[in-house]
Image (cartoon, rainbow, N blue to C red; front, side):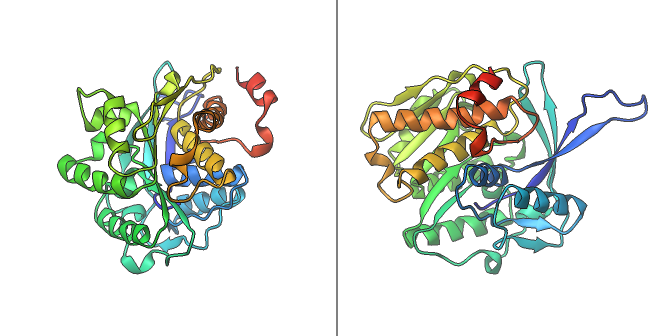
Length: 316
């Protein structure tokens, strides 16, 4: 995993004093969330991120390590931790405000990035590929890894309020899409990137740019797997008692990657060989991981032992 690890601050359930606002700090950052989700599912996972030495960074390190994530590739960063303020509407859908100026996650130097390893699978995306000065450094590194036959997984996780240079970001993103074997993207992402265009149309066009597999998520509407030249495969979402949607997309990505890893499909060309039954199973498993996460506060994906029939019984 390569990208940001940040802290989400959300309004506490308890009402604060008239002159105060009670908030709860939880671990966040899309690539870090995916790393946690994968490690909890039993997939050997290393996280390459710039983690601050401040109090919040120490909290993030402890959270990642408790979840089983290997931090040997993480950088000890002198800059402060990135913070996101999370607001929830009455339906439990999250909206974010980010405090990113001068923080650790975006200050990548080429020498801080890990060396290439044969057979490695890389997942990245979100703010790490959007915010300068680090975005260009990461894009160059990913291009080099792709040239060395690494499997690249991408989740744009678009945050429109931070895209100050949308044309430049779109150009970089299209290059990354063409380099990736697996792309997971949401309806919301594609509507932000291509207003007025059907997200399924955009996702289908992306699948023709080079990825073996594009998976489009529709929130409560389920997900669709797209392989170029084939009919899309659709899977309905599980109905659960929703607490909030924070980290749901990241949990879905973790479930999807875990399924592919366990089926020896984190290799170039392998995802395109999956038949409809296998793609449906992959979407169902990823959907289960995301559904359980939606029954909890914050980005708190399930451990492998928590999945199964009992997980659904508790979630519904």
